[in-house]
Image 1 (tube, rainbow, N blue to C red):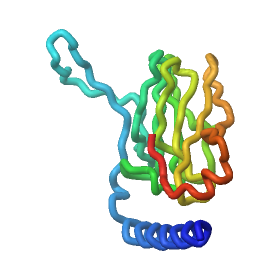
Image 2 (cartoon, rainbow, N blue to C red):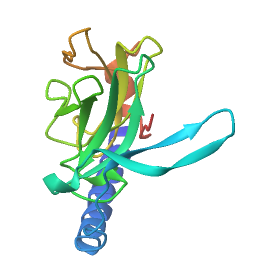
Image 3 (tube, helix red, strand yellow):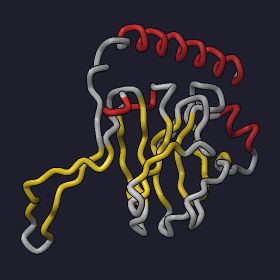
Length: 178
């Protein structure tokens, strides 16, 4: 029965996803976002007047969203997609890394997949990160972990471990965001 319910939910999810993609195929495609910074004076609690673009995604015809600075201040991880600010339904969405020392941005190729990768967050030591991916079945987001070394090399990700992964992931009907 569990497999029948899961199959029914997958079919319903695919149908709804197709409808959403069709109805939203043109809506919002003109919205693309860059990553910017603005000064802040902690003593007065006031923001500065100048806004600086630190990564121009629009030049690439893309949208950069969900910037998350690493705790050590070395990187900003963000999600790059074709448009908009909610990449969870964008199959082309990938996680990128902006090195604040070199001011160079690059896709996190070792961790990205052919399906949606987004909603990421850093560990306190800035060497591990968690993100969501639809790489398993294209429908449900699952949590993946990966690490980054001192040279900026990203490891291959692994699925969040479970005591009984086959049972857990085959029967789980939840999607995750980090």
